[in-house]
Amino acid sequence: VPLQAYGGGLVQAGDSLRLSCAASGRTLSMYAMGWFRQAPGKEREFVACISRSQYYADSVKGRFTISRDNAKNTVYLQMNSLKPEDTAVYYCAADSMGLGGYYARRYDYWGQGTQVTVSS
Image (cartoon, rainbow, N blue to C red; front, side, top):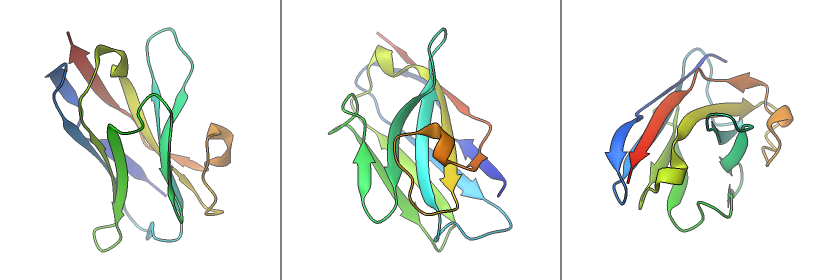
């Protein structure tokens, strides 16, 4: 499933951004979808996922919201109260088994990433 993530940018601490992940060719409604991020010099880490429920990393809980619009075949990551430590390349991913979860290896398909930079 080709995935395209977009919506990143340069913002100030406290600002908001909404990332989008769109798919072409297949419907995402049966996939579990996740967002991961990777900061320079760090490993890729889990941010949020949505299957039957939504799950979040502790570091973003209460600030980020993952949602999906099946009619638009798009998954979103609403990011509020952004902090400089949120700076990273954000990737969306799809799990064809529909389970999702915290582990990147569960996901079959990955988008190309979109840069989010939060200045202090």
